[in-house]
Figure: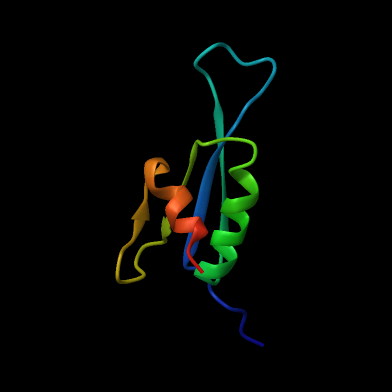
Length: 77
């Protein structure tokens, strides 16, 4: 049985209490649909504004959603 291929990612900063002032690790999760990626991004925006998203290469059309635009993108249905 073929599984669905992930075409969207959401990347976010992980704040560690042991990290220095400017050091933040990042994690990325992948999703098969844009709606799933948006839902996950909305949950992260409660904790941090350092969230970005986009399509995974070679998926076309290529989309990159910067942290400055993530709130508007995640709010769209």
